Image (cartoon, rainbow, N blue to C red; front, side):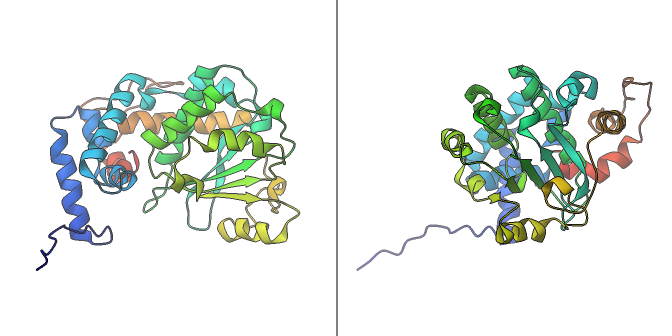
Length: 295
């Protein structure tokens, strides 16, 4: 009397089904540039599939848009001297410590905004993201955001245009890269701004946001569960007296620029001179370590 439905049910926890979807997406892309091939690792394809609930057609469309964006914007070619002015106040940087899972921590301090350049701020964000991803240890592919809203007022609010583009880049070109985010000491007035940008956020991204208040013991426990108080900066309720030093951080980023150039260089070529001199990389070794992270 009744026809049996033959709809196939995809199980994202089934390794064979996942691999089949990844291979299907890979074959659907067609020929790619050298950098496109390097970008579209198995881990990368899985992230785009995850972002589109493992729908190959929608994932392909999303990934192709990212490849077009990367070909035009060339995020892998941004270097520290291009964006260092944006970092002078320590408004956003890769922390010297990691969370309890070994994930890269990115610290953001909106009250320390020091420029009004829309393009400069976007370019700096992309640089930090690319750097954080390539700094992830083996076995990790997500990062942690620690955002300090202490003393924040509407005067510090990011222009909606900039906030919207930042959100678009994060969600469309860096899918599934955020593990968890902690919004530290956000004032009541922040709720107005948050409601304005919440409209542009993916529901799964919203689930990763945690509002933490230094005077709220229970909310601090959530933060301590992720980041050990011993390494957490004092400003965030921890016991680490570490502070941002622009000169020291610049040296670190210049060294990282060499690693970035090494990774993205063609295997048959040497890297162009970066910042302080010429560097001939061991590309094969470098690629084997971070290929899965570059997506």
